Image 1 (cartoon, rainbow, N blue to C red):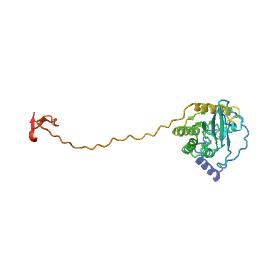
Image 2: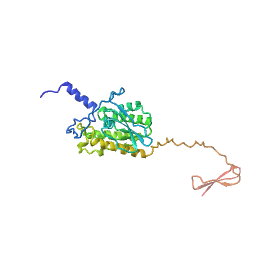
Image 3: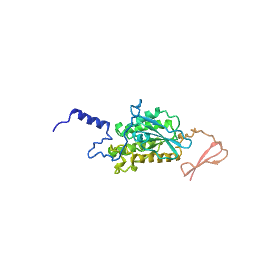
Length: 293
């Protein structure tokens, strides 16, 4: 049996190191392909900040529609290129899309984006590319925390929409990443809207043939409806109120004990001593008399 080359062995070690939570070569796992269709990708400008394709698409200002800004990766591409349309209604939509971007790269693009007006709400599409862009769950959580903090530093109202499941990747790492994102969002006071259950894994027509991206005819229209629905719902909810910091209770001032002098005239009975069988009486001129019972 021929021995594996050193190069291929080193590649396997490197893959385990870089992709420990999203390897698709686990024993017993077979990548699944979708059966839906997806558009041919149009060329986009390349960002000088991240080296990835990037588009910022903003709607015309409307006095009667609330402005929603979506920030995400290639799942937004069909919406930006108008292969798939957002539902009509009382909302207008802008997109900041960076295909292939991780949370750290989305943070870079978000902080440097020139957006002249404040969105009524910002929706972050959870970055599923961190399945392969970060070496583990904890690192993905740290990167996602930076993305959330960056978004909240620019805009007052932010929420997160769950990423669509992948057929071509194991489900367990996706769920681990989803739970980590939810934990980080809760820590930052941001709502994380779970939508994975809206994409039945046995409905392969929802995905394109790569098993990663949603199909233009079924999968993406479903995602567009979810984007509209959760954006509208979040706009109806009030801004989260950050409770004021609770200061520790002040300790009462220390009262120093002080001695008192009591002047007694005449015969006065003093309180009982610890011995219940003795009684002490103070007479004139300070004479003390002990009475036994």
